[in-house]
Amino acid sequence: MKQREKKHKKKKRQGVILGLLIFILGILIVLFSFMLLFHTQRIEVKGNKYSKEEDVIEWLKKDKYTANTVYIWGRYNFTHPNQLPAVESSRITLKRPWTVQVTVKEKEVSGYIEYKDGYLCFDKKGTAMLTTTDKPDGAANLEGLDVNTSKVKIGEVLPVSDKDIFERIMELSKLFKKYKLTPDRIVCSKGNPVFYFGNVKVLVGKTNYEDRVAQLPPILEKLAGQYPDTTGTLHLENYDASDKVIRFVPDKK
Image 1 (cartoon, helix red, strand yellow):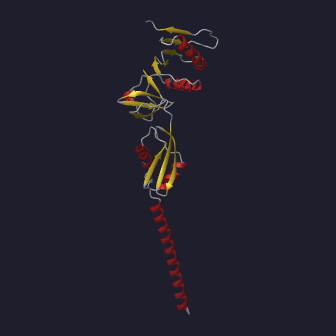
Image 2 (cartoon, one colour):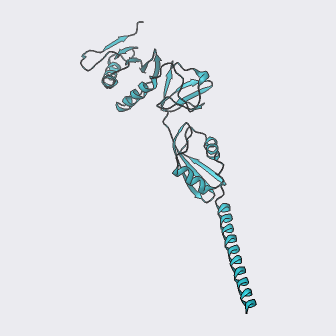
Image 3 (tube, helix red, strand yellow):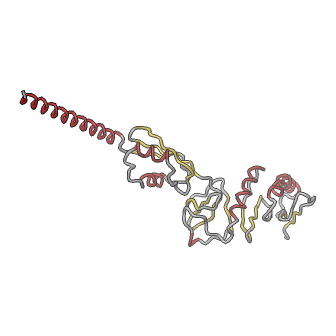
């Protein structure tokens, strides 16, 4: 009787162990299948205009766990990873279990300067975004900006002598968009941005930009009609809303 009970307990114990082994084996098979199915084989990049595709892929691969597409999807969609200097945000989707698609939203290029053999682009805060050999479309070329080029670092604010210049340019850029104005040139002169619209050089000073820029559309239209081929300077640097006269001084021939 006792031997029969011992055999029964032994068989029961063996059955439990076997069941546990089968359960563990099943989990391992599922995990292996999961790792195999969602192993990162391809990364596609969308939305990049300035950022190179290989830079975005390299940025993504810096994380040692990016061999798994599900990890990439969760890590980069539900946390706040450090973005590339030219990227404002990114979104990850899985086109297939093994294919990741990175859609980037790049920062707006506020301006650029000539730098080495190409152009150095910066955002509205003056942060160096990237260098490129192609001239950026729709961005202002800042001439005469006093930059210590030996200390330029991508992802950091440009080392300039006038720390407030980018804030002023950003404010003026918003006003130009508001009044549908596009300067042909922007020159930084002694800390003051100087704008060129065709033959007209415009001085706006450092304050009261809203009142001053609001005067530009009708004045430029009037000057184009009355002085179509005349170069000169439009003085708005001391203008305020109470002024009735704005000086335009033609250049001496």
